[in-house]
Length: 103
Image (cartoon, rainbow, N blue to C red; front, side):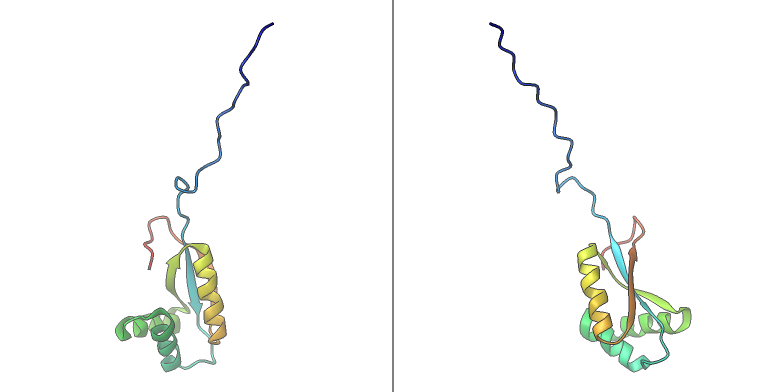
């Protein structure tokens, strides 16, 4: 009688600790409805941005049509986009550049 050990193949699934973090970003888009002061207020209230940075991001939205307001894991960016929609702002989520830092 010959006994053989069962063949066990290595687990090729990646552990959550070894999977690279894929970053996403929340982008707010220009619209003809909301005032500049309101957009600054939303950025200060929701993202807790300093006034100068909130004004800078608002001017990006106003002059270029868009501004990145947050960067992080997709689930968090989905929450931020939903929040921007609840404030009446147009926002989308998009992949972040690999070297972009979390904001």
